[in-house]
Image 1 (cartoon, rainbow, N blue to C red):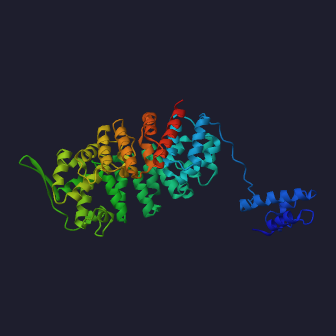
Image 2: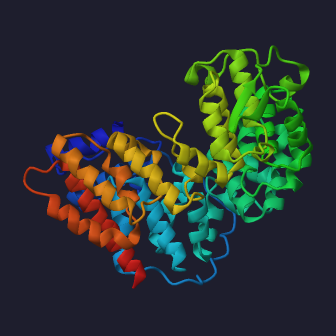
Image 3: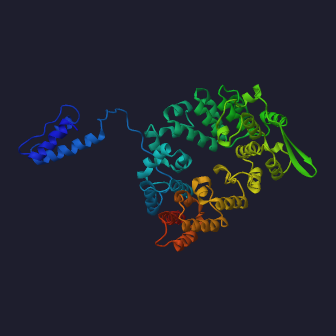
Length: 489
């Protein structure tokens, strides 16, 4: 380990009266030499304490002659209760589902409270380790939290995002800075876009794609000018992302052009009281489609849905067409598409358009018609948009398939009072069949106001033959209930 440590150990083994520790001239010697050696045994013990601490520290700190920072201002919010602190300690120190950390923070912010100072370093470190918690962590900080963030280079970026864009970008790691841009965009759309514009030219392809993705929140016609700049990017991936955002702006020149372009390939006709669709595949890529990010090379879509390049181009054309272009009722359009030989690219294109345009009417139609296989569940960020009735219908169909689909994380929105009994019945059947499930994901599907009732029903289902998973689910729901009840006091 080191000559100094070996010498201390040797003195302890043979006896302090028989051997005096020898200290190396480098490292901790200056401090060790100052120890009182009159008491030989005490001298060895004190030397061991100093050297072990030195070895754990790893290096000697340089002297910092800078003045100390001004103290933090007094906090304005009260700290949470002792019981809530104990709950926080549990989600930190035990392998609890990550979603419990998010729920604890959401409850803290919702009640206008703050975390105790001792836990601020942990919460600030979550900015780096769990960037999806960025908004909640930033909203939870009081005066001491912001003061502490300014002292650490890893955390300081959050204090700079609205002050100095270049310094903010230079001082933060990639994960934190992209989360900070998304936070600013949600808080102030104009400032968020201005920051993206300021940083745009210096970024690599991956970061430019992430910056574009941040603009999806609070997207508005005011973003059109910048998105047209991005549509002229040298990289096809950037052009494709810009095209997707522009298609969600029905008034944009891009959207108007897409309406004209799709009419060359897809037409709906009312014949004999029945809606039918006529399709002409793109034969090749022209300059305009290349500008929109289309490529002749195979991409992820080809591999996932097993399509030819022309079919993929058709899918992308439909996905970039404003859904308001289609003049017939969405359910009728989807049923007409399902009867066509090219139903796969047509339906996939509509599904993609409904997602990035966040069109609730079409999301409902996709659920209602149930033409996607195995069934259609809106993407996680959009589940909060659909009605309770449509969400219940989607959950019911999913449960009829298998609980494995549910426990894969496809559902993130809590179940309704209608969905919970269906879920419990299916869970009971899965237990009887010995089928595995992921309790960590299922635990967040139970709404807060139904936790007590669900816990009672699960306890009634549990016996000596119950699986470890069911017991873990019950115990974690019980913890969630205690956590919510404490913040509600």
